[in-house]
Image 1 (cartoon, rainbow, N blue to C red):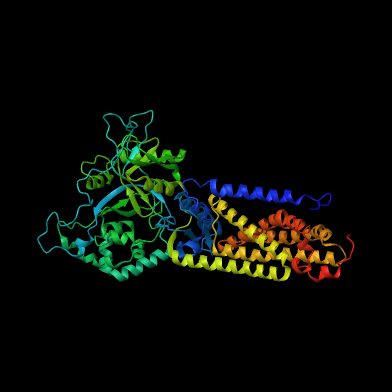
Image 2 (cartoon, rainbow, N blue to C red; image 1 turned 90 degrees about the vertical axis):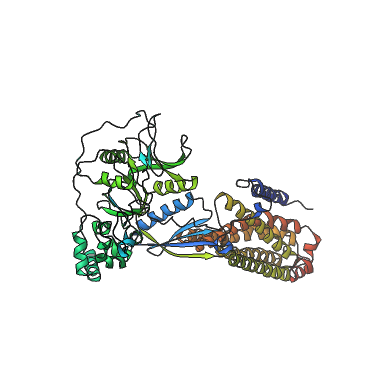
Length: 629
């Protein structure tokens, strides 16, 4: 075999470098990061997208007053928070994108198992003192018993009558009581006792926010719907109607039971609480963000009890961090909260207010209605429209706190993540949820692979028909490019989370055309060199030197286009751009480390010099006696 011209690298060395790259790549495929616990067959599986394996796509629609569209900045901030929540759930292959000016689309490949259910929730946490409590008496008010009135005609405020409410305590001591189910517990601190009693604070009245013209119009429409007499009676109520003495007293408010969640939300908090025919079911159907207003009193339900809650004096942003922890003493999962500097001061003031209520404060009566033997007020922990806990405050807390309850490790982590990742700047409502079945995904995967095989087959048929022996170079190059691409997909899927989609397969199919172009450029340049009078052996390096610049320029333009498309696009288009760019880069690797070296080796064989075998055909026949250049 002839030695390569001086200054040209030996083809064996280039092929050795290519072999070394293959070894490194497939070592990562079989024994690299993320392979622990996987069988050898599973290690060869790239991560597939929603459209190939099936999965769930959920859309969340921004909801603002007046139907206005949120700002792009708010939508992007919301997208980042939802993305953090999805990733914190451990959901694999999630994609979170902004679609239009008010939609956020979350796509998860594989089985979502309802894990996307809560990621779009606003997670607006509020801490509110419980001012009053009553039972959900709508059923009794609408259908009063025919028997004589009795003390048991109306249900008790709490579903668990007589149960002791959860408690907020100081640092645990041998004789101290601990926080109960669903309550608060102060983390251990140097001081084992609550702060010393202080003078009862007199909270300054907080003016409710002004009522908008839209709400006033809605209330006028509701007044017309329920009737002037029922509306006037509801406005006069200062406390819930006592159905125990007169079960029929709620009949005059019957029309309020026909109100929708949006209509109930337009009523004043006092009316929502006092009217006996407004049920917890109606309250729970209020729109998202219905009780988020910090400066307003609100009404919420928990376990069959309606509660009138004070303004929010501590909010979610006052919390510095939240984390799930396993309490070593109780063996129960808790959510530990650390407050910010200003937030800790607000929390201490709120617990002092609940622990030492004023003489005219109705919160103690509410606590006793909800919990037998309660001696201090309750503070409700409200997440969006749900009261997740309403513990009794048993001390003034000035340090780290814990949310306790019947948490599992997963539910404690879910709550901690919702708190930790903050409140969304925009309230979202759940839109459409689409599920691609595994069967449909498999069918699309097969269709994509068939299309890729057809494309590669057509290129190979053309190559063998037109270039003959040189067609084997094209075929082997495509096979090597395919193996490099496949290995890269597997490794990238495990290390960076790259997901192969149907659009990605389309990108790889398009790259076949890019690879074929580089072959045509090289081989046609080789024909030109031979036609100019050079021998086949001397024409190979000269053709390579001239074709190389064109091949690099063409592939560079393709890569630049793929990069730009990847940066400015979202969703499936980004997957197409990444696949096209990746396959083009790997094609360049094969061009330099396989195609040119193998052509140098072929140029030294007799078959290459045969016009009928090499595919150079008439070009060699026309110059059999030409001298080498």
